[in-house]
Image (cartoon, rainbow, N blue to C red; front, side, top):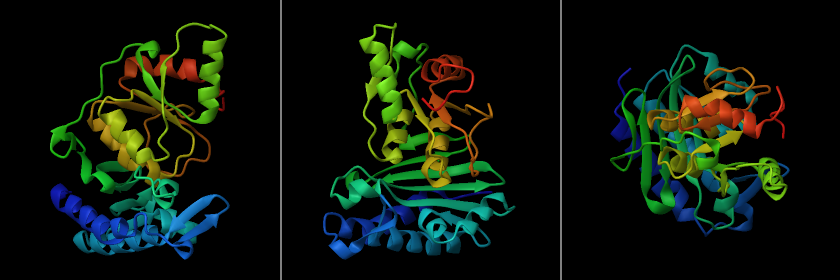
Length: 274
């Protein structure tokens, strides 16, 4: 399947400029809603996803769409991931809470997959007018500059981005002087920015338990094409854009250090719930 990657970048950029940025720091109370307790959506999310669906579907006839806001309305949309048709996976605003609070750490994420295979992905940072792009077998770029992970060979060399439970675990090991620990990086509240930092070699390791396909399909391909390695902890298989009932995604710069990171972050045979 041949995709004009630059044209898709243009579509995403135009949608962000038309539907997201004009609303940034200008949302009124009625523009921010809850899909479920604590899970925000804004009028910008809805408008951007609608326009992305229209334009991406028009570009690739017979393609399907799995969008975050569409799934929130009807979970049956997720069945498209198992189809034989190309599937656009869309997160119109990753980091909606940041966006709603007027903070600039958010992104627009899109991936294209078919039969579980990631074909191409885009992470657009509207506030900084930059886009990271990956295409299977063609590498990863940020505004035309090649992205590549760092060649890190041990856990103590790593800068890791983790959730609060893992951060508490590492800080306790440090306080109890239980041996070398990695450096802790902030978690941005937007996996779009996590993945750009991972692909650029600014961060070296990340672990995620919340595995919505729109949160990870774009970033995983970007990380892979930048030379990184990913594997699911429970299934011991590479990430694919499916619905995971129970598993955890661990990303490292290479396969050699993955097992060391897994053992450090998840002590015990199956305890990835630290």
